Image 1 (cartoon, rainbow, N blue to C red):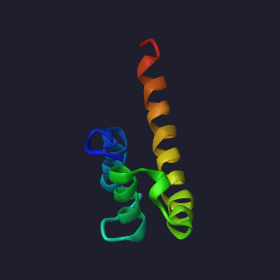
Image 2 (image 1 turned 120 degrees about the vertical axis):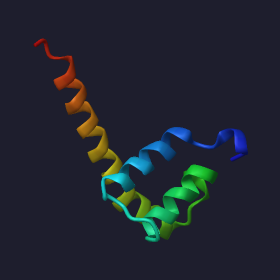
Image 3 (image 1 turned 90 degrees about the vertical axis):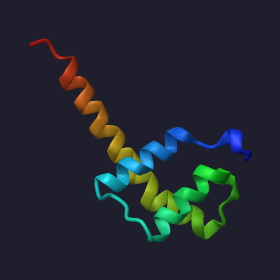
Image 4 (image 1 turned 90 degrees about the horizontal axis):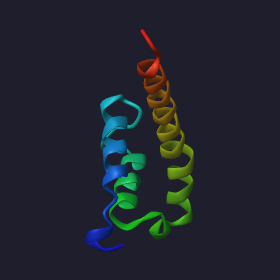
Length: 78
Protein backbone atom coordinates (compact mmCIF):
# COMPACT_ATOMS: atom_id res chain seq x y z
CA UNK A 1 0.00 0.00 0.00
CA UNK A 2 1.43 3.38 -0.91
CA UNK A 3 1.00 6.71 0.87
CA UNK A 4 -1.81 7.46 -1.57
CA UNK A 5 -3.63 4.33 -0.38
CA UNK A 6 -3.70 5.42 3.27
CA UNK A 7 -7.19 4.58 4.52
CA UNK A 8 -8.49 7.87 5.89
CA UNK A 9 -11.98 6.49 6.47
CA UNK A 10 -10.68 3.61 8.57
CA UNK A 11 -8.43 6.03 10.45
CA UNK A 12 -11.47 8.13 11.39
CA UNK A 13 -13.44 5.03 12.37
CA UNK A 14 -10.61 3.78 14.60
CA UNK A 15 -10.34 7.23 16.17
CA UNK A 16 -14.06 7.04 16.97
CA UNK A 17 -13.52 3.62 18.57
CA UNK A 18 -10.77 5.13 20.72
CA UNK A 19 -12.96 8.07 21.69
CA UNK A 20 -15.78 5.70 22.64
CA UNK A 21 -13.49 3.38 24.61
CA UNK A 22 -14.16 0.40 22.35
CA UNK A 23 -10.42 -0.07 21.79
CA UNK A 24 -7.47 1.40 23.64
CA UNK A 25 -4.11 2.77 22.52
CA UNK A 26 -1.25 0.45 23.31
CA UNK A 27 -3.27 -2.71 22.82
CA UNK A 28 -2.55 -5.26 20.11
CA UNK A 29 -5.91 -4.42 18.49
CA UNK A 30 -4.94 -0.77 18.21
CA UNK A 31 -1.50 -1.51 16.79
CA UNK A 32 -2.90 -3.94 14.27
CA UNK A 33 -5.60 -1.49 13.22
CA UNK A 34 -2.87 1.11 12.56
CA UNK A 35 -1.01 -1.41 10.42
CA UNK A 36 -4.17 -2.04 8.39
CA UNK A 37 -4.67 1.70 7.94
CA UNK A 38 -1.09 2.13 6.71
CA UNK A 39 -0.47 -1.11 4.80
CA UNK A 40 -3.81 -2.85 4.27
CA UNK A 41 -5.35 -6.04 5.61
CA UNK A 42 -3.33 -8.30 3.32
CA UNK A 43 -0.09 -7.43 5.14
CA UNK A 44 -1.28 -9.03 8.39
CA UNK A 45 -0.02 -12.35 9.69
CA UNK A 46 -2.60 -15.01 10.53
CA UNK A 47 -2.38 -14.13 14.24
CA UNK A 48 -2.82 -10.44 13.49
CA UNK A 49 -5.81 -11.21 11.27
CA UNK A 50 -7.36 -13.20 14.10
CA UNK A 51 -7.05 -10.22 16.46
CA UNK A 52 -8.32 -7.78 13.84
CA UNK A 53 -11.26 -10.03 12.91
CA UNK A 54 -12.28 -10.83 16.50
CA UNK A 55 -11.67 -7.46 18.18
CA UNK A 56 -11.54 -4.60 15.68
CA UNK A 57 -14.15 -5.76 13.15
CA UNK A 58 -16.89 -6.33 15.78
CA UNK A 59 -16.13 -2.90 17.29
CA UNK A 60 -16.36 -1.30 13.85
CA UNK A 61 -19.65 -3.12 13.24
CA UNK A 62 -21.02 -1.88 16.56
CA UNK A 63 -19.98 1.67 15.64
CA UNK A 64 -21.69 1.31 12.25
CA UNK A 65 -24.91 0.14 13.89
CA UNK A 66 -24.83 3.09 16.28
CA UNK A 67 -24.34 5.52 13.40
CA UNK A 68 -27.22 3.93 11.51
CA UNK A 69 -29.54 4.33 14.50
CA UNK A 70 -28.54 7.97 14.92
CA UNK A 71 -29.13 8.64 11.21
CA UNK A 72 -32.58 7.03 11.39
CA UNK A 73 -33.50 9.08 14.43
CA UNK A 74 -32.28 12.27 12.79
CA UNK A 75 -34.25 11.56 9.61
CA UNK A 76 -37.54 11.06 11.43
CA UNK A 77 -40.08 13.85 11.02
CA UNK A 78 -40.67 15.99 14.09
